[in-house]
Length: 95
Image (cartoon, rainbow, N blue to C red; front, side, top):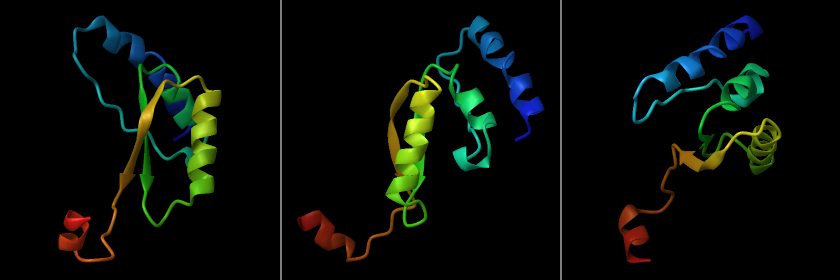
């Protein structure tokens, strides 16, 4: 996302806050695609880090977390996405 686009979103967050929405979900591009994601994540009320299983190494996830913390983002937690079960599901249920 170009810096111009991120700058345009700077006005969007205050505009949304003027409305009486209960929740607004913003899907931000991956952190490795540029600083625009950090500019968008900082002013939001909360951020959830989405980590794709078996694609993102833990070092990269930690790096993303540190970037968000450096941007003063309020991080609620993380979601592990696209998890695969490597043993049959019925065994997981018995554990």
